[in-house]
Length: 86
Image (cartoon, rainbow, N blue to C red; front, side, top):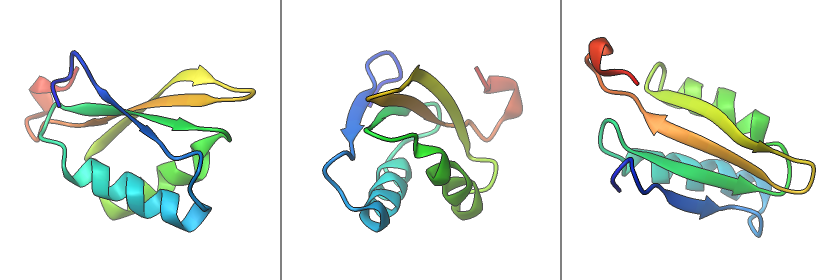
């Protein structure tokens, strides 16, 4: 997934426990510097601490669209070299 054309991961139809595991599995498939757009019908704020607990310091999280009916969050896998962080 090139960073210039991130894929969308639409978790709206999934049950909450399934959302967490799907986001983590998608994140784990990213190479450093790659990202995807998380799409949800509720604020996915509870997924952020879950991702941080599972992969500390590896993700950047940025809201692109903040409700009220749909949320888009860009999740980036950070490069291990801090000088390469966008």
